[in-house]
View 1 (cartoon, helix red, strand yellow):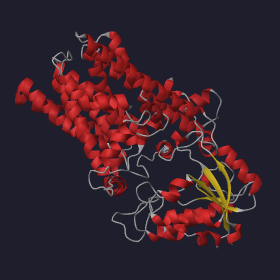
View 2 (view 1 turned 30 degrees about the vertical axis):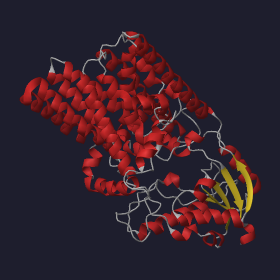
View 3 (view 1 turned 135 degrees about the vertical axis):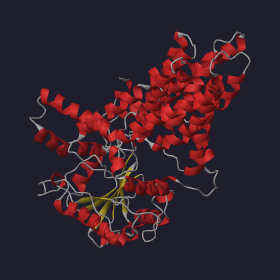
View 4 (view 1 turned 90 degrees about the vertical axis):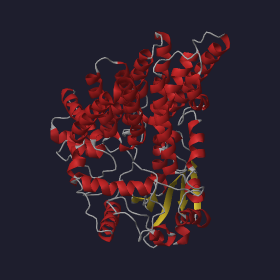
Length: 551
């Protein structure tokens, strides 16, 4: 229930591919965008099927046609359903922490405290509010650690080889980046099994797990298999978006990682970040009572290798969702060594373990409290919309703030013509647009606004005429002509609603976009500012500029 508080926080996150899940219900199992495996889409589609049945029983709709109409009229219930799926997956992290603690012979009280670390993990609580696969990746990774420990302790290797293969297949189905941790983990497990059971037993165990993965993963991601070439094309785009060398060289991402790890909400918190570095030392201390130290070392090393490799590849640009799986793993290990330290025979280490564990939980409570507070806060969307409607209803508007105001048909046509023009420019076939998306007639109170042209995170600096990847629909490079004020003024647009102005005007790349926003500030009349009430959920200060005097 904790992760469901504020699940309808007022915005649709751009990474929530609810449309792809809805298309599965129509038989379209190949996603329009193949950045990630489609398993999460299928999972949400099953939830939408359950939603349909539930809605029929509650008289929310009369049949499939009404259900479809609801999606296009107001998709909020679909987003909430997908977020509930995400929250349920996230909630599994706590019992997995508990099971691992018990398997490592911690008593009930200490195992419960370990589970509380997962329950109150602020980053996990935050990401549970966004329907994307990172949460499944994190929970799946913890499940892999649980299955690995069980496999090393069992007298029935076949069963746990199958379970481990299942956990790996599910984890890779949420996000393929799991391989950065799972590959070194597999090597470490093989070494441990070879030492315990001999080379033959280790090879057989590995082959059984691989067989399970080879059967399950394609079945769970059949849309990817059917369009594998397109998946590879999207991975090239993903490489451009994600692999950022940075100005500080290949190690530029490591200081950013260190700072991120110490954050209370988007990191581990300062206490657990420090314990993460000390985990190997605490495992080696003479009084450590945890069994399977070799396995715990393998898990820590795998997480460390995967984390450092990812930081080197991504450079200083590290979005909050990037580390949820890695940090969840480190949180588990840190909690285990602290719980073990809290039962040490010596007074000082025992007291230190208890105090540090209590401090870590206190940070978690504070961080989770802030996440839930912001999730429940009122958005500024309504206030911005009211201001636009009251002052600029007869003007042409460009906005980077999502508006809920009815849009004029002519404004939508401008957006559609732009998309078609870019599709021709890059020789891209556009996905079919649902008829319900088209505005056939403007509402009486419709406003002539268009959404400010955007660019996918990581593609900002790609030259529009010189890409080293095959451009896909809506993964266009930034178009230089659109970042000249005269371009918009000549087309009758004179009102600009800008979200997060200071960042885009003074920090964000590329320079041409910074100059555009700086020109707005110097040449146009500044209107009111709307401070954010929920910045964790990508709400930023909104500023309004009136450039009519420049026309």
